[in-house]
Length: 296
Length: 263
Ligand SMILES: Nc1ncnc2c1ncn2[C@@H]1O[C@H](COP(=O)(O)OP(=O)(O)O)[C@@H](O)[C@H]1O
Ligand SMILES: [Mg+2]
Image (cartoon, rainbow over all chains, first blue to last red; front, side, top):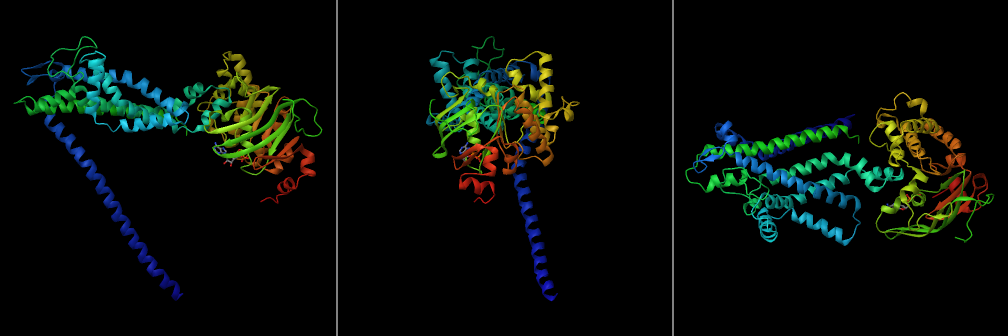
């Protein structure tokens, strides 16, 4: 009895102390996450606060005037949408196709291992290097000139590693047994992929694609030498035209034009941010829609 | 092709499947060693043995499911009706339509009960609604599942119980009217009632199909076996008519295993 009490008491204190330590631990973790989120929220808040005044119908739909100090940013918005679209047209089929090849078909050889290694490393290359590569290959060597084609191809190449690695991951997360079952019922490998694997991997693939396209849409360096126009107050007429684009326009009006009203700078940033965030929302909605249809 | 083949002693010489000198290696690990046996048609043959003795691997070799694996090596030959299934020009999809497989863990494909049954026939090009309907009824009946699900053929397959899911998987493989049915511990996750239902359906099915089953217990093996092959670490130790193997095993290792004195 005595012994029991004696043994009990320290245990009790121990528990209390452990709880305290645990609570302290949680506190530190919560603080850390706040520290991470706070600057982002602050930046977004500041951009909204200072830029919202610039947003009106004219700003969104008119050409820039007076050395970009007045008017709108319509051509830059259209340019960014076109570049993102062009990037998607190239990067989605090649990226998803490459991921399907790597995840489903490629035998485990030194070559496929080298390809994987290259993809991982490509994702870490600074975007300005892609810009120079695009200048060399698409603008000069292939003769596309500074054009939407050259810019889209450059952005697509930059985006491919992201799309390939996230899509491959998504495909690999579908249990191998589904492929086996499909094969055992007389399905070819492609039929199994098409009917069973791809639908289940789709949420992950869509996430990867949209993350990649978001990055492409917001990049400045890769379009600097390949497509972006400093000031071009009209819409592009063909894929071989130059165009203005939001990230580059933002860079230009923030650093290259003296006396630029801050409101226009923040307004442009806000539009870019809104485009990116809305794409994000679309991605989330699509993803959760497909998630609900999945069964494992 | 003319080499002598181990036959269960009382079998006429019309084997459905002949496995000849098959050895198999994963990476550097040999899991089948010079296995030779003939599987008679329209009978239940069990592959018996402790875990890791290579039974599943041998089943998967019979319908070439291991083709996709890297770093493996197959020696020897496997014949289905005297056709070497690993010969050049064999259409693997056609082979698998002739040799169906049911796995230990029931895995419904995404979709409804009906869609699961019709997955194989549709891939094989069956469009006719009436024929599809016939197949659904026939397969679910053969797998002793029809009465339980006939009113909800269009509900998701995953909404069924585990036992029902496994019978669905059997029904699904029957949809292609295979000549051979391979079952790898098909009742390992099932309760006794579902198990006996599956075993009952095996008795029905062997009139029509050639069945190879890896049982989940020696008792089950003894219940269903017309012929029994005992494997140990990749070697075929003994292959005899089931009644003989279970009542009077010739090899000491077989006896130890079936009497539970093993390992
Ligand atoms: N895909 C695989 N890769 C490597 N080794 C495997 C693979 N599948 C099975 N093995 C090994 O082969 C041996 C035989 O396995 P298996 O054929 O599943 O035996 P059983 O079905 O009799 O338990 C085991 O040692 C197992 O670890
Ligand atoms: Mg096994």
